[in-house]
Amino acid sequence: MGEVRTVLFTDEDGEPVYEDDLIDQYKDDIESWDWDKIKSTALQFVEKEEDDYIGRAWLGTVFGLTPSGKVYTFWTSNQTEDDVLKDEIWWDVLAEVAQKYDMFIFNGEGDPCDVFAGIIVDQPEEEEE
Image 1 (cartoon, rainbow, N blue to C red):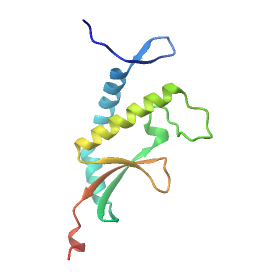
Image 2: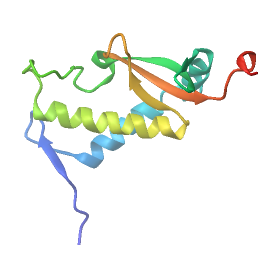
Image 3: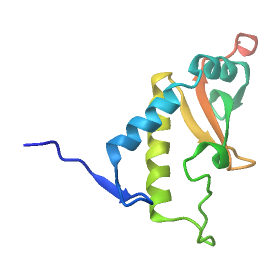
Image 4: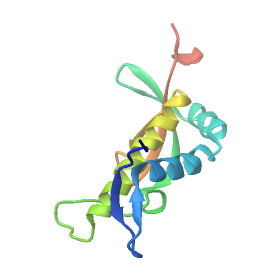
């Protein structure tokens, strides 16, 4: 028997869009980013947050990074089910790729549209007692 593939939706030409194809597409794109540079940048910007030291590197904004380029809020109606599915898969793939570099993904506190890669680091030497 053949492989069972999950169709998420059909594109504007009526062709099926498969979940595994989107995952592969997003993974290829995100893995092509310079993760060594992202990690090195994060290690240059370390701040203490509660009991941890967190390094952070700005990746961009939701508008420029996610497939839909949209922010979802309860008062908007411009998102489609297709947008939501694509974005959910994209965020999952981004988190998976970041984890390969011992990093995690989070949004900005001041502006939740900002997307950061973070890394937990040991206590900086100048602050050790």
